[in-house]
Image (tube, rainbow, N blue to C red; front, side, top):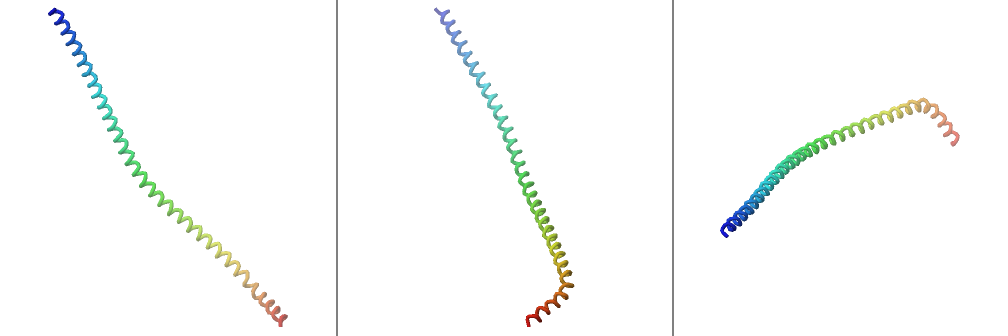
Length: 118
């Protein structure tokens, strides 16, 4: 019976040792998994920091571009306004030059119209 007792004890110890080996293996896998996740989290953190700096640069660039386009639009509007004023001035000058010679002749007919009314 003592042999059976030793055999049972040995089986029991072997079973316990197998359980301990399994638990140890699972713990190692868990530690590796946690380490892997930690590496992934570090990678994600680096990526998020890169995205943040990229977004800050994008915002600065877009604000700068917006100001540049606004000034370019303002310059274009000024140029269009100046051209329009020049065209109107040319038209007014042409009208004034054409009406002056006609106004002296027209003034005489204007007097004759007045004389008819008198």
